[in-house]
Image 1 (cartoon, rainbow, N blue to C red):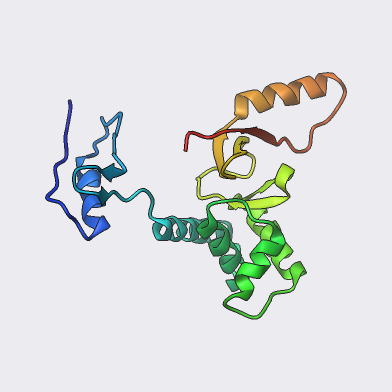
Image 2: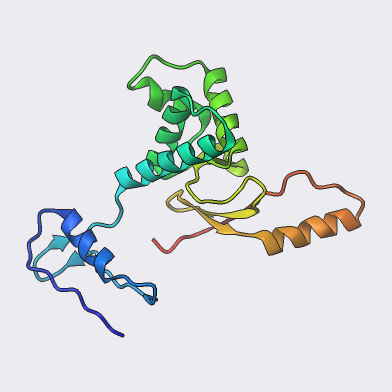
Amino acid sequence: VYKQISFDFPIEDDAQIVKAYEEAITPKTKLLHVTHVINWVGQIMPDHDHGRCTTDAIAHAERVCRDRGQKFTPIRRQVLQTLSSSHRPLGAYEVIDALAAHMARPAPITVYRALDFLIENGLVHRIESRNAFLACAHDHDTASLVAFLICDRCGSVGEMAAAPATQSLNDAARQSGFTPKLSVVEITGTCAH
């Protein structure tokens, strides 16, 4: 089934456009084609709602902490908000600088402890090659094996399931008499954006 969504341009409210697409999507939807700029009228289509992304990450963290009986303290929340709003990996001192813009500058150990907690609960990933941290709103547990797709051009980092590949590497390591503790797969290249 082919569906085409039509609008009366110009539209001032991005939410109106997003709502029209949300209403058109069904469980059978396989492909969406959204033009970023409507050339004949110059309308710029919304491409990402950063506020919603951060809100979703915080809501996910609240659920995870509640389900595990963990405390989602204000500093943990603030660190996660900083990471999720950046959409790129940040070093610990970049997190500290961002937090210091709107609160008393936190001590590095405070931020590192918050990062450790967030990593242990699967809410943040550490990008080893960049010595940086990335918020994660995916609903996978801490034992899930993921690969990071790191763009050399724009610095963005994507995440994909990597259980089969990582399991093969871990099996090969065990056959060599090595007991793997942590498997991190980072693939660098150029993204489509």
